[in-house]
Length: 79
Image (tube, rainbow, N blue to C red; front, side):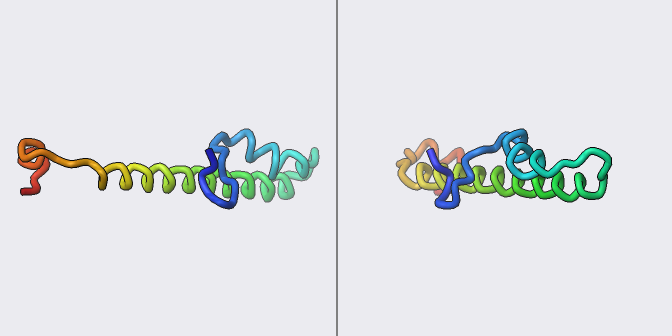
């Protein structure tokens, strides 16, 4: 299942690290390594955020299709 049209399907950090940092890590170059590791972290954040937005949208869609009974409406605070 694709989370969106941009392909943010992965929410595991290791996959972001392998794609955005690992190919560019150079032994003994801490500044370079930090730059690419931050890029991997940022892309990981984007992927997780998009996954959460997709799940929230699905939950809201399902919620709008639920018919509440009078008894359940009393507990939810809406009348």
